[in-house]
Amino acid sequence: MRTLKKTAAVLLAALLLLVGGMLLPGANSASAASSGSLQVTPDSATIYDLSDWAKEYISLPAEYPGSVQLSITGVSDYTCRVIQGDSVEVSAAGLVTPRYTTYYWNGNIGTTISTGQPGERVEVRPNFGSSVVRVQSGNNYVDVTVTFTDYAGVYADQVMEEYLAQHVTADMTVREKLDQICQFVASYDYSPSFSSAAGMIVSGGGDCWSSTNTILAMCDKLGIRAWARNGNRDPGAGSGHMNAMVEGDGTYYEADAGYSGTAPRYYSITQRTSLFSYYTVSGGIELYQYDGYDGMTDVLEIPEEINGRTVVGIGDSFLTMDDSITEVILPDTLTYLGQSAFNSCSALTTLHIPAGVTSIGAFAFTNDNALVNFTCDPANPSYTVEGGVLYDKAKTTVLAVPAAAQVTLPETVTAVGDYAFYWNQNLTQLSLPDSVTRIGEGAFGECSNLTQLRLSENLTEIAPFAFRSCSGLSQLILPESVTSVGANAFQYFRGTLYVWQGSAAENYAQQNGLDYAALTLSGGRYDQNRDGWLDVLDLMALAQSVVNQETDRLEDFNQDGITDVLDVMTLAQLAVS
Image 1 (spheres, rainbow, N blue to C red):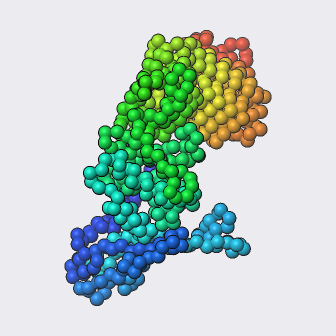
Image 2 (cartoon, rainbow, N blue to C red):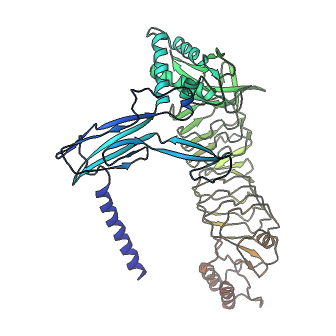
Image 3 (cartoon, helix red, strand yellow):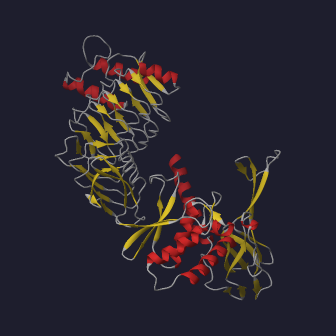
């Protein structure tokens, strides 16, 4: 019956999808603003308004319409409705007007429903964007795209274009054009109230983000490639600082017109010999940021020298969150990699650790789930990589497993290091060797696709957050040897813990309200097939051991001095209970 119901549900869903596809907007739409005898003018339109903040500085000119009346001819009976978007509404007669959303603010909390509290602030926001209005008569219809636009942006564009027409000529170099652009930006006061080009130009002041956005907009109008640069890590820069990178004349320029003060403000244009930003450190320089734009290259080769100075280090968060670089080539001059140096580089597939690197910070390769070509120079005295696993040279500690899906750890390993497997989304199964005595902080945190894990039978310590958000584990056996479980070790863990009665692990499970089952026979190997899972396969494994007289695997579950079929029956009874 369940199968029949499931099949019927699938057929019904397919039927609904088919019918729904026939009713989707545009499935039979006319190619022009007419369908049969139905004719609609215009076939597209733009209407305007200003946000409340902009109304304090400028007004909407009469030539910029706030609504549009559709002219509908050829039929006497028709309907009008919005079929896509929420920026406009339309009357039965075809009058298209803007839509607004009212927000009610109580302190810093805003909702679309009034709470009625004293002092509540009301804000009306235009729903800027595009919508599709459908005019339909019988089976014939015409779709009209109407765009609701903020005039503040139009006004800012006009101001920028007028300035460029007056101050920039075609024979200027990119450096000269950029200088004129920066002069324009610096002619506005610094204000923390606005962060967009329109905000600064309309109001008369803006912050470093608005200055940068204005530089980018004006460069774009001149056909000059420019992109935003994170400037908050520069020496002396404020938190959240932003400036611009500009490419032209065969070189790169760093343009900053976001300094505080009143107009005319200070601005700077620095010619760059490299797209790597760096600090001076002992022995050379440390690269703290790559300043190329997204998609500029897929292979990032880091040089041994910049401006005659040796590159000895990669700083903290050097390439964090990059989503376009697939390979990083590190120079042999490197001696260290900072914390989170390549954290969350979603496209990174290839990286080789040079021989001279003797220090690697935490999270250096975390959430790099595409890093399948992960290697280390055999001559490196501190680290080695095998099978996508980074170890210390003696292979006693697992340090990082960013992308490996199949992992076999050697018996030399005694510890899974802090955050070693953290956010590895490829890992589904793992068996730790019995040499492991410690699982570090956050070691398996966020490994949401890990479904089966066998822990070492000599494990003594589980550090804080070790299994945080391991949502794929429905059960985990904590060995009797465990004596220490850190705070939040199983935060957001939703499976069942199997613990030994009276053990430190049971006390931890009780104190933290975790779902657990207590095992009663001290020293008994319930997980007979060593797969980290308690199921019928363990009964079969014990039965096979009895038949084959595999003395190294036998367990005297009924404690009668011999191992035989009665132990299989005892284990079965324990499983049931």
